[in-house]
Structure formats: C-alpha cells, structure tokens
Length: 337
Ligand code: NDP
Ligand code: PYC
Image (cartoon, rainbow, N blue to C red; front, top):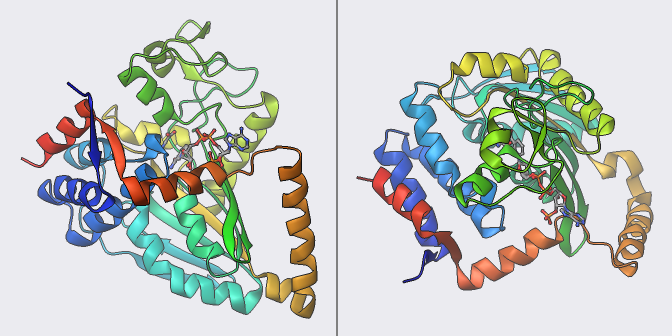
C-alpha cells in the first residue's frame, strides 16, 4: 500500500478550505489560507504547504487567531500604510491593503506597509510575488516565536525571522529569495520530526546546549541562526524593524502571548517596495538589462538562481498535482468531520 496521496491543485485547495471553514474560519479567511497553503504545496515548500492547516486550526481552537476579523487601515504618511489585521491571519489584511500600498509605491517611488496584530504562519514569497508582478522591487520580513538562540548565546530569543526579496524580470519568473534567518525554518524541523528523519548538523542544540541532529530535542532546545553572527544580526534587525519600529511584538513577546498553546506567531510584518520607474525613469531598461547580465553570470557558473527550484516545482504541480504523506492527508480529512 502506498503511503502518499496525489491531489490535483483544486482538490488540495478544497481539502484545505473544508478543514478551515468547517472549523469556523469565515469564507474569506478560509479561502485566503487555503489558497496560500495550496500555493506552498504546489511550489514544493512543504513546510508552508497543507501541513500548515493543522497549525491554523490549532491556533483557532486555542483562541489565538480571529476567525472572521475585518482589517482596518491607517494612512500614516504619504509613503507609509498601516493595516491592522485585528488578530486574524496576515493574508486577508495584506490582500485588502495591496491596491492602496501599490498606489503609494508608484506615487512616492518607495513605500512601506506595516501589517499589525496579525497571526503569521505563511511563506513570505507569496507576499512578494504580487509586487514583482506589478514591476516593483520588494522586501518583506516578520518576527515569529522565540525559538532561535543569538550567536554566542544558548537560550531561544529570536524568531526564525524570514527575509524575502523580489526583483521583477521581463518575460520570465522574478528573482525571489525567501529565507529564514535560522539555519532552516521551524516548519522544516517539524517535518523532519514527523518523518522520523535526523536533521543536518548545525540546525540546532538540545536543552543542555549540545549540538543535536534529533528534531524533537532541537524543538525543545534551541535553533541556530544561519551563518553564525551574520544570520544573528539579520535576525535582530527583523525583530527591530518588524517589531518595535511598527509598534508590534518581538518574538519573545509573541511566544509569551502564546501561553504554550503551540499556535502560530502573533505580531507584525513589514513590507517595503520600490518602483524602478521612479528611480530610473527612461533609463530603466538599460539598467534592468545590466541586472539580467548579473543573473546570466550567476547561471553561467552553474549557480542556482533562488526561486528557480520553486518555479520549476510549480510547473510540475500544475500538470501532475501534489503528493501528500498519507498521515498528513488523513489528519486534514479528520479535521473536516
Ligand atoms: P530554504 O533554506 O529552503 O531556502 C531559502 C532560499 O534560498 C530560497 O529562496 C531558496 O530558493 C534558496 N536556495 C535554497 N537552496 C539554494 C541553493 N543551493 N542555491 C541557491 N539558492 C538556494 O528556506 P528556509 O527554510 O530558510 O525558509 C522556508 C520558508 O519558510 C520561507 O518561505 C519562509 O518565508 C518561511 N518562513 C516563514 C516564517 C514566518 O514567520 N512566517 C518563519 C520562517 C520561515 P528556492 O525557493 O527556489 O528553493
Ligand atoms: O517555519 O519557522 C517557521 C515558521 C514560523 C512561523 C511560520 N513558519
């Protein structure tokens, strides 16, 4: 007997939607989350694919996410928009804010969007792509829960704090990197634990502060930043600019708010976008051709272009669907009943 299940993308969406809606999420939120996790699964980002439905429902049952909140807006400055998710997932707030945010970016050349009071479980490339599709250069980051020790320390303090960046490209997929500032996303470690697989070295330490490749021990101990002090500095930056700068929680505050319920992180996300047309005017084409030269030089050396694996996986899934572990499939089906 096979221990996987193959689903078309519409079937994957329907499964996620039913699990979310039947547990109490409004149609609008269930749709936004189901689309997001289906896109994650489609792009081969399993740590932020359908597996996340379990955490979304857990967060709802724990009372740590609002099921039907409507976002509200504050126009803080010509180049700053704030959207308050009112305790719901970030996705509906982001969607609702996008048209005004994009108009501000075009108007000012650069603008920032702060999403406040949101519960955040999702991959950031999904927030970058709607901006690169509009020809914009974009950057996004968010704190999470205090799971990661700063370089030189031994106790969890930072979140896994992802940073994503996107650059639009004419006639082809954008250049997008999206990376946790920890050696790997927490979701990746959770998937290793579920599959009973050892972790690569360098991802975490156990409760006693010893290096460990056992996923459960690392989940109870602490995760490590990527690149030692460099990832640590970037993680601290994310805490600051997507925490206190936008009036929202640090990862330590988010974990305290969680009260050991195992819910998704609560706090803010900062997105900054730039309009190349406003920076470069008539010279844009010339300078974007130079950027293409950079990508070509990378590829010529055999270097993998970040985002390339994901876009390839997307093409494959659109044709052949996605494959879920049978245990995960059954857990999500059980949530629908
Ligand atoms: P990875 O380490 O798998 O990948 C990070 C980036 O590096 C990706 O853009 C990836 O491109 C690229 N990449 C990977 N390997 C190579 C290579 N050999 N050469 C060139 N580029 C490469 O991801 P993470 O585990 O760091 O993060 C996974 C996801 O988790 C992200 O989407 C992130 O947003 C999400 N996350 C969300 C959090 C939240 O609070 N909401 C917290 C932490 C993480 P490609 O995609 O093409 O593989
Ligand atoms: O995988 O580290 C993670 C994560 C945290 C919040 C959402 N994903």
